[in-house]
Length: 260
Image (cartoon, rainbow, N blue to C red; front, side, top):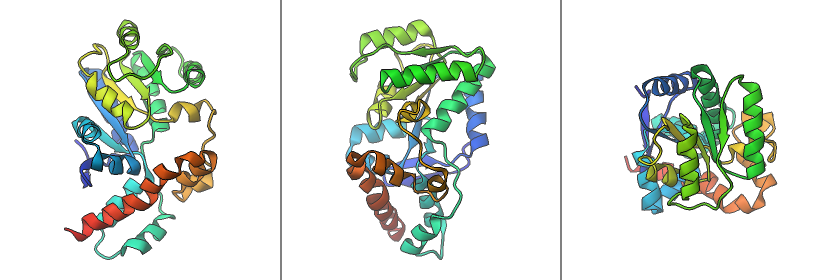
């Protein structure tokens, strides 16, 4: 049972805590079947406003966990009867949040697969980063079987060598690092093509962070919910995407609240 699901724009976020997320993953791996998980962040909510295919892929998912801190603020603000918009944003800088990030998802699902002795497969991202993460996971979780999909160019229809590799490897968990919106749309499109996969989840740039190809934000920035500032420093080209998350998303949430 999901603790709470809240509509944000045209999609919903399922606000699960760490333990609930682990319990859900453990239950799914035990029972089998297909499950698509989206690690949702504010810029994805904005993308869904104007991208029908992506919006449908997100809403067709079995679980949409809160990745970005802005989603935690949105729930807080929408539920509050007293906090004005701008003061709530400023106050939120000092509020602890509980998120399920792409990095968290990789580690949590690897741990669950090690416990249940089920294979895991890494798809997408830079080849060297994925290989480093696979090696690191094998060392961290004794006995864990980790496969890495072969090098390829992204293609919505597969490509065939990737689908064949995954079906041959028979992973229970597929970690997809194509970035949004590609990863969500790809997972949604191939739910009938991957016979063994129980959990397919988009993890964004998690391979880059875990392989230390891209250093994670300092702890103090994460504590004040400003990890986005670090990403902007490392990757200035992300400026337009960060604008969506830190400006357009709060404005969307304010409009939503005012219309209620």
